[in-house]
Length: 203
Image 1 (cartoon, helix red, strand yellow):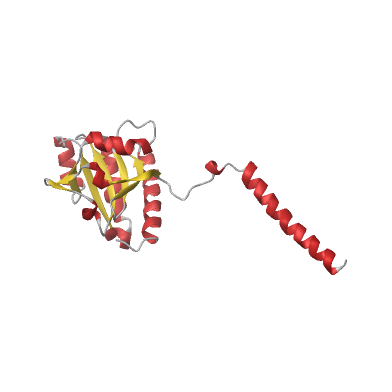
Image 2 (image 1 turned 60 degrees about the vertical axis):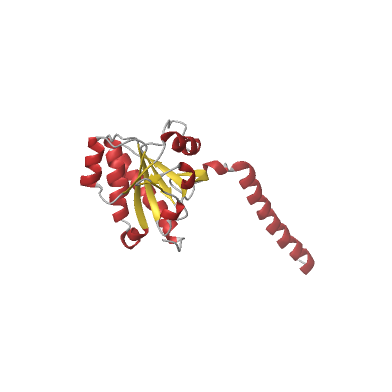
């Protein structure tokens, strides 16, 4: 085989492989079905906490308060059932501790859209002490967060949110009553947090 013909054959093989990959990717693979890196549900566009009208001890709570830390946030409506307790304890308190050396880079936050009832107040004080407690208007929070959430959710309450150091709420996770579901959700949040912390120099 002449050198020129050999080169054409090699080029043809290279282009053939390229075209095969293109056709496979374009027509045979559904991109929406490919596994995604994040395990939680992305909130797009991200929601700036400055827009939520949050307060802490009567003072505005803004992205200036979130600087230097990543945050696990929970929206409470004044009540706390089994899923709520599982979320606050296993998906936030215990999960934060499981981050080992990165635990100090993550803080826990609860947004009260209504005054906590005695059961929730006792649970916060006795089981998950150390959370930053702030207040916020339910209507505003739901208006800004619900469009990015699952259509089965009619309230942002009783869900967990990841918040960046610049105050952007960028991912959410549901809470569960069943312990098997709780453990699976904990793995998802931990994976996302570890990946986020590994790729960040902040916090």
